[in-house]
Length: 142
Length: 142
Image (cartoon, rainbow over all chains, first blue to last red):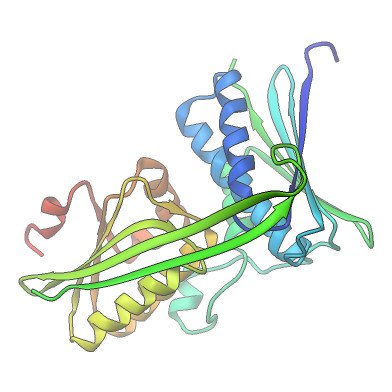
């Protein structure tokens, strides 16, 4: 597609480097004139996806890479975050009520919860033994 | 007036190569948080400045334990507007709010940006805490 533009970057699996991707996401968001609140949504979703990739996907192994691609299309911005892990499997959505009821000590899954709630579309894809990816979409306003 | 300062600094030094960093470059990533406690009347005010994550959130948990030991039942969490809160930090706050329910404590919150007010509502924290636009408003009638 002629109007499609894409950018790729890679970070090592070290916590803190997700902020490099977040800064990049802010720049992309500004270029395509995303509203300020959508840029904030994008920042949080990108940070969570990268943190999951670093911590759970690549198990904090610094040499393992997290690859991130931003694709700007006519009607949407797509961000794909890929790690070298095997996926995190099914996680029960976290619940504050269950935590209060003492059913869950420190529930996992708030990162994925935030990604799903802040982005317009979210897909997870895993190639066992090869890679794991989360693809997120922000729809652009007319 | 009592005051407790709980600083947390996590530094990791790694040589990385990548899009933004040339091979062999020295890099320092830091995650800082500063948590202070003071009392105003019978309200324990916990000021939080910096990144709220799973690692730094321990400083907030420590502060919470300190105000519990002091017997406080009214807590005000004051976030700095620049606070970055990720899912690990959300999990810490969920834990504190959960514990406060059992301890019959009332928690009020202020200083959040619009984005994090939205996120606190999304995860359900606003069902158990009240969020105020300013510290003065939060203290009024508390």
